[in-house]
Image 1 (cartoon, rainbow, N blue to C red):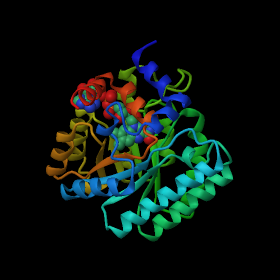
Image 2 (cartoon, protein in one colour; image 1 turned 60 degrees about the vertical axis):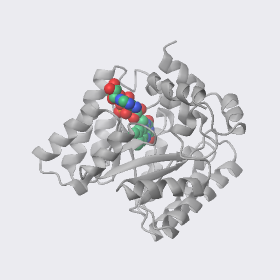
Image 3 (cartoon, rainbow, N blue to C red; image 1 turned 60 degrees about the horizontal axis):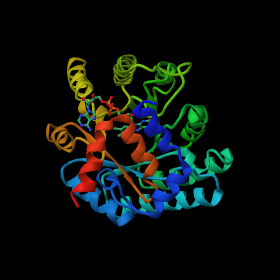
Image 4 (cartoon, rainbow, N blue to C red; image 1 turned 90 degrees about the vertical axis):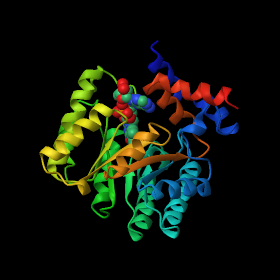
Length: 301
Ligand code: FDA
C-alpha cells in the first residue's frame, strides 16, 4: 500500500480517531492545529491579523453519526461566529456539512446550516462549505444551491481531481469559490489519479474562475501554482481584491507572511478542536515529508 493510501486509511479509522481525542493534541498535531478551545483560536487569529493575514476557522469534527453530536458542532460554530463578531476579527468560517448531520438526515443538516448562515449573515461573515469525498459531493452542492437562494454569504470548494469540476466551475460561476487539488482517495472512474493531470486541471480551473470575475481563493502550498497565478493575474488585469491565496495553518509559514507582505490577500485556514486526528492524517497523506513535523515534535520536547 502506498504511503498516501496508508495515511488516508488511518484517517478513516474511527477507533483511532476516538483514542486520539482522549489524549489531546499529540504526535505533532499541535504544529498544524490552532488549539482545542475558542479562546486559543481567537488568540491565533489576532496574531495573524496583525500581519495582515485573514483567517478561516474550522471546528474539527468527523464521524458524526448522531444528531446530538451534530447539534453540539453547530453550537460550537455559532460560538465561533459570535467570537469573530465580538472581537472584530478578520476571519470567516469553514465547515463540513457532514459534521452538521449530512450523513444522518439531510433536512436536519439543512436546518443546522441555515441557522449558522443566518447568524453569520447578520454579522456579515462569510461561510465556506469544505468539500469532502465524492460520495458527499452532490448532496453538498444541493445544500449549497438551496441555501444560496436565501443567503449570499456562502460558497464552497472545487476539487481539481474530479472530472466534473470543469462543469461545476461553470455551474457555480456566481459563487465565491475555493479551488484545491483534492485531498481524498477517489476512484479512477470519477477522478484523475496522476499528479500531472491534477495539476494541469487545477491551473485550468483557477484561470477559469478568475476570468469569470467572482472571488477566487487559491488554496495551495505549491509555489509553482502561486507563481503561475501571480503572472496570470498581472497579464489579465485581475485586481487583487478579486482573489486571495490560502494555506493551512502551520505550513510554509514564511511564504504565508511574505505573500501578505507583497500585498496579496492572504488567508490562513485554522483548524481547531479536539477532533484533530483525521485532519492530521490527511495532511500526512498529502505530503509524507510532513512526518518531519511529527519527528520534530516528538523529539524536541
Ligand atoms: P502539493 O501537495 O501537490 O505539493 C506541490 C509541491 O508544493 C510539492 O511538490 C512541494 O514542492 C511544494 N510543497 C507543498 N507543501 C509544502 C510544504 N509544506 N513545504 C514545502 N514545500 C511544499 N481538499 C479537499 O479535498 N477539500 C477541501 O475542502 C480542502 N480545503 C483546503 C483548504 C486549504 C486552505 C488548503 C491549503 C487545502 C485544502 N484542501 C482541501 C487540500 C488540498 O486539496 C490538497 O490536498 C493540499 O493542499 C495539498 O496540495 P497542494 O496544492 O498544497 O500541493
